Length: 410
Ligand SMILES: Cc1cc2nc3c(=O)[nH]c(=O)nc-3n(C[C@H](O)[C@H](O)[C@H](O)COP(=O)(O)OP(=O)(O)OC[C@H]3O[C@@H](n4cnc5c(N)ncnc54)[C@H](O)[C@@H]3O)c2cc1C
Image 1 (cartoon, helix red, strand yellow):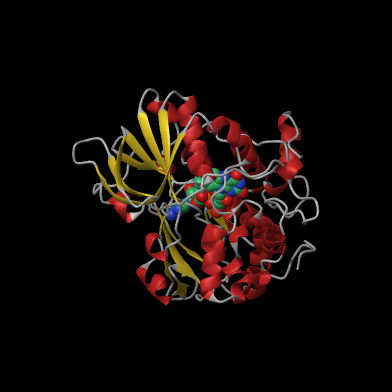
Image 2: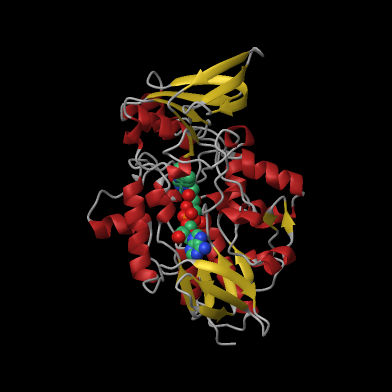
């Protein structure tokens, strides 16, 4: 069949996968808004938590690492663990990678994907075009997966929004809008803590509300990491090293263990460089849980249960829920009903086999939706190094394309 492969997504995973497929001589059509999650759904002025060594988008050819981009752009070479990457630099890197390796990217939305009666898949684009693809790679990343806990969602039946009483952190880009306002940020992960610090620096009075005692914490700086443990892209620890170096056996673990590890490994912990910008500038309320949220009088009020078990009300001008992302096939509404009902899933996530293929032959998932099968490394840019060559090799082998380049990573 001479139809192209459709890659849906133009973030780090979609661009990397497309580059690997192209290097094997496989015709591709690639769709998406390049680096949009980083440009529009993360705060301006953000710094990456991942270190330079863990922040390259994998390419089949040498010369496309973050350091190569720094050289080409004439900016300071970001290479050591102490070099911190501004989000604007990372966006520039992604766009440079796209220009060099995936210039044919089509900035259109895929509206639907269904199985084609004659084999392969039928895709509908928002330009109105219909076309047939021999295989489809879903690399839609964070899109449509923002998670708002039920107790916060109740307060905003019309949905979260920066202009309403409650928003999700993915909707916040310019935090200067909260200058002079009282702001509550719910969460204890890097996104919550950095959003809080940036808003405080912009002139907001900020309180972080987090569940559990001692959850607001920061990692050790590189020079204080234990030397006797192996290095991993996420810091020195045996568990992190194993999960990032050997994602292969992950999908054979029991489902409960896989889902637990994806949630917990590299869970809430602020970056080492954020501590000084946060402490003393942002208030912290550690609570047992948020019982309910109410915004019936315009501004939001959270009723929390304190660690001592007492109810307490916290009010603000606005609440930002930095409560993360949850993979749920049901939220990927571009996947046609027929496809979704045929997909084997585990707690809403697609069950993937070798080479990132789902239970529907020819339908692949990479990035965050693949984390329940290949481990927490898939939540991060460095996961492209493991995923992209393997996905491309599997797709080439299953679709009769044997002109593989020697990537040396079997
Ligand atoms: C605040 C925050 C900070 C982070 N910091 C780091 C960090 O420091 N280091 C790190 O490694 N990771 C970090 N991450 C995780 C990071 O976002 C992911 O690793 C990465 O973006 C995943 O890339 P992706 O290509 O899978 O998806 P995304 O970057 O989310 O890209 C999704 C792509 O899919 C496209 N798309 C979606 N739906 C459609 C459709 N229907 N049709 C066509 N195109 C579509 C979009 O246009 C976009 O191009 C952070 C995440 C957040 C939220």
